[in-house]
Length: 118
Image 1 (cartoon, rainbow, N blue to C red):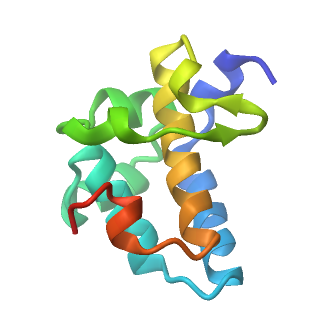
Image 2: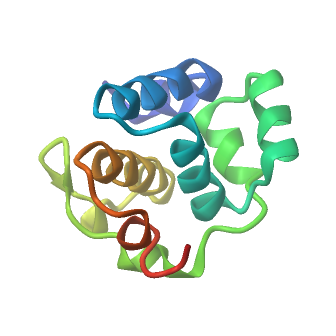
């Protein structure tokens, strides 16, 4: 799938898939939300507004209040590609989120997922 198609996807359509992935492994929606808030700087109210407005991934990350300062600590492989090596900055942010949800689903402790801050 080319990047422009991914960028145009509605975040509100993908969000339930993140939750399903986590819940299949015994994790919760609240934990997925905490990861999203940590990564993007959204709070509950602003995040719900983004879901209601059905923004796409590009808008979701462009309008994010503040990308976490520790985002550079997110390393590893998603879909066979190292997230730290992704050249397109928007795709890298999407892969960061994918990686964090993967870590949650694999049972990693929240403190480690959030790179030491809880």
